[in-house]
Image (cartoon, rainbow, N blue to C red):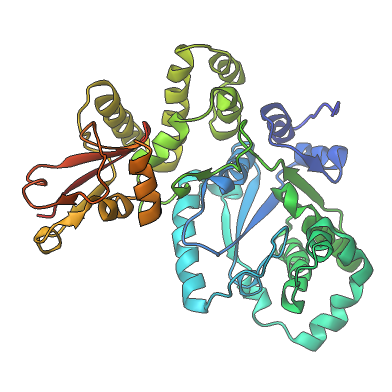
Length: 417
């Protein structure tokens, strides 16, 4: 891409590596240069927290606001009832209204840390598409909106085509999802003057549909912009780890575990992650990313501190770094480690080390815990665990013990009270 942007926001998107594709580079750039632009990203409420896989888009909304434009976080209270089929091999489980509402409440806690919903003319907006989707009249919707969609064209989109090519079922409910998402863009333009939808590159087909529908119904020029789908340098999907999703809510993943995820970044990813997930100067990102040998570890601590400060606050980042230093450099237990508290009744007759490893989040299952022990990957207070039949009783837990899985994952186990 040789386009040279005029607007601050497009310059940030291109120079920091956020931009995968855009429906009209020059048109969007001119709109951004001419005045305040309103843009949105949609988030279906499929879990009660966002995870690291969402963080790229959240940072994009943050930069949009920092550049003087207005971000909309659109909660999918309506579309979650259908489920996005994009690049999935099966249908999403359908959630009830109470679970959707609880998930939205959990997700809102994350957005409030990255966006300002109270600041002047470009204050962020939190909307829910259930506001216009729940009350739709089916026949009116088919007549007024459905007539603008070609089934032939919908079947050609890669997100749908890949599912059908594998002869995997695509329900009529899911097939409607792209129409509903397109309608979101139309309604946001009509109600709030929103002219830009952003999202991951897997959303390209849905975004293009919304642009086409809005042009047909309102004769309005609007735009789409996508981010690359990130994988780590070793090929893993961004945000996945041995322990599962890296959640952004502290009640699902401790700030220490979040900090450790970033501290354990592969050397080759440090510079790129500094550009994408922090607001550090680009020259400094390049300098830190180019460090070699043991010096790159200092850059990883800078990355972990910067990302954790944005998500959990400076105090949580400092506490996580202090705990890591105590655990790894001094051999201590650390005050901020994830902690499993066991009741006296649970340990009265002894509790197996396998069960404790699972409950502490260091193994996914009993089988996984036994494999960890067999492969000499589990330790208790730095002593290798060799017996999967080992039992812990109140005496063994008279003071807290530190369990480790490999070199990077640790947890404290202690008696409650």
